[in-house]
Image 1 (cartoon, one colour):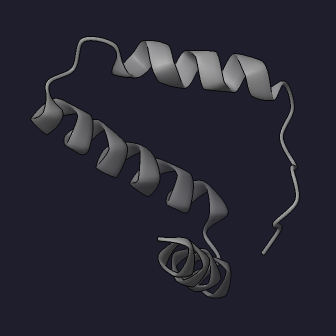
Image 2: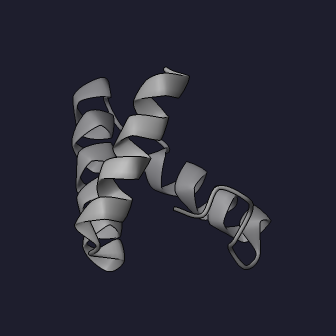
Length: 61
């Protein structure tokens, strides 16, 4: 699992993320977030990496 910054143009990504969430109801935001997580998990694909990410996110919560 990569834990240090590893993306290109983080500012643009953050802006796109905020724009995509603008105006959504709480229910729509929850559905959007779940769908985005599933799409990104599909891109990762590796079950061990996904499990490590889930554990790291849970520990941070």
